[in-house]
Amino acid sequence: MSAVAVVGAGPTGTCLVERICANAAELLSWPSLDIHVIDPYPPGGGRVWRKEQPDLLWMNSTAADVTLFTDESVQCEGPIRPGPSLAEWLGRDSGLFASRPVQNAYLSHVFQRAVKTAPRGVRVHVHATRVLDLADVPGGQAVTLENGRTIEVDAVILAQGHGDVTPTGEERSLAGLAAGSGLRYIPTGYAADLDLDVIPEGEPAIVRGMGLAFVDLMVLLTSGRGGRFVREYDEELVYLPSGREPLLHVGSRRGVPYHSKTGYPFRGVRPPVPRFLTAKALGEGPWNFRRDVWPLVRKELAFAYYHELITAHPKRSRVGWEEFQEAFAAEEWGSLAMRRLIRQAVPRHLDRLDFERLDRPLEKIRFGDSAGLQKWMHGYLAADLDRRSDPAHSADHAMILGLLSVYGVLSELGISDPWFHGFFSYVASGPPGPRLEELRALAKAGVVTFLGTDLQVGHRDGRWRAQSPSVPGGVEATTLIEARLPAPSVSRATDPLITALRDRGEAEESAGLLKVRPADRRLLDRSDTPHPRRFAFGPWVVGGRATGGFARPGFNAPLFRHADALARIVLSETVATQISHVA
Image (tube, rainbow, N blue to C red; front, top):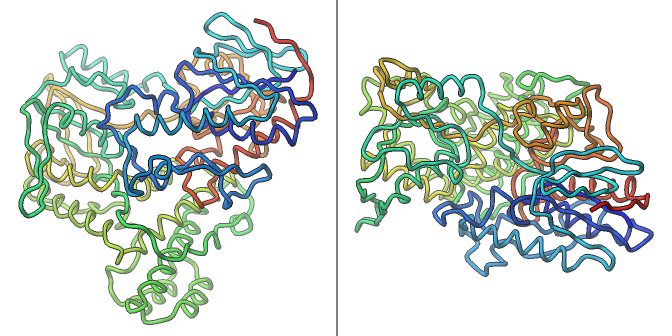
């Protein structure tokens, strides 16, 4: 009898289980395989997508853009096992943003279907506990569980997803200042995991961060405290406070929230990318991302953008696509000739793609007072909502599709850059449009005040103080909230298994991510030696960033391609020796 352990039962682990089951009949010469799925949280959703979360917390992808089933677009060696997208499973509007408990139900369905449709002789065992350690045994691995059991398997795949980490030095310092000064400090983390009850009502609170974590906090601290949104006669969204809200003063490096999701179906032809970002164009590494990779990425994204603009909105261009693409391909991005080509082809300045303005819209803008900044932000939010709901700007959507393609290519090449991950999230992985509309209503109600770009937070006279170069002065408060998730870090991981492997030198990190051999995702030790029976997979693994989001139907998602390849490696190269299982 052979066995595999999958550590982690969230979406990543669920996808792996489905792919192992799908490939088992072809790759195993005997119909006998035990799959041990180990996670203290129920399988399917795991911890992050667990059922016990407020319905107020939504997904940031529409139901039509979420699937955990392979389809004919997926280029993999294993069998395609189609299934419904979240929207199809719900039988609901494709533009719905489902709550996290609803997503948990879908993920649980995917897991149970994988188990029920597994080939004869393939059994899935769920262990509601944690893994404490791994040890080599003849022909396999001994997996020590927190509940006292030990399981012997042929191979182990680590698929824990985003794990907890100990605070950084700065975070420890801020927590110490708070404790010594009678202040409140809310650290990084998932909003559903934080104790937000300690944040007092009616008092100012400084919030550092304007991404998805901020949106969740905003919802829980406003609607979650009894506030209501209503439509006025002119369809304007208005917030009616409950009086229990804190007054949120929010800023970040960019000073603006993530762009909202597009609110219209994309009707155009999928952009013909990737075309320029290739291994040949990059040459031999190592690479400096901003110098060597970013110019090719920008050219790729611009190619997708202008392809949609010119083919779907021909009246906004002076040239046809064939003429444009030939000239575009011949020039380097950022060159004088490239800038001249775009100016000549696209007459309206607002139709031209400006990466600097897109990335830092508040850069070098200064206001005489906070009122000026608030007025600018209200207009900015309104413009973003209008643009992301208007198919006349479908070139933006095409660029997002290009970003998804680029992200997959970089993952295939083993290139991971924190700045680009942030840029990708800001442009392509923002909140639902209704959440940004709620933010605008909260700002108009005075519950949210914007602080500006390049936010700096310090401690003075027993209070937190925040200031930004966008406006003179600053704001003081007794509460500081870190509205962001902790960055991945193997060196600061609290997971007992990762800690044990790391401390023995059997696991190592690169830029915070768990190191694996890219070709087969075998775990690398301190000397970069791959372990024959230990694998790691997911967004916290080197080269795995592209597997972190939910797969889109019909998009040849990296999650499926990579999970299928790993499942086949594990089954064909490690599940070969019959070993005993020790209870």
